[in-house]
Image (tube, rainbow, N blue to C red):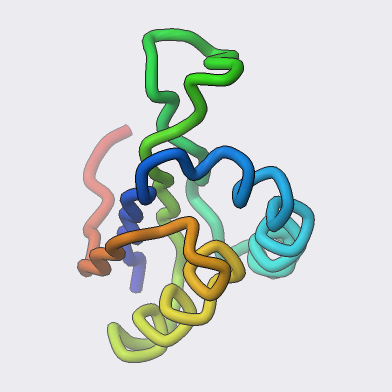
Length: 99
């Protein structure tokens, strides 16, 4: 089943994001390589594709997992979560309807 993983950053997360980004992306790339990612990306802090020093307020991943528990465990062990980039992570089942 698909799961939405919505994560909210701590204040001033950009330095930690930059430091931890390679490990975070490598982990998601594993899911991509397995064909298990529908979409993934950060939420800019301002209305811009490149927010610069404004940074980001969170991230969204929609990926396939065997269960809610597996999705939650994956989210809880994300390098951004472990490093303290994320203040909060919400994981919910997702049913794709459109397109």
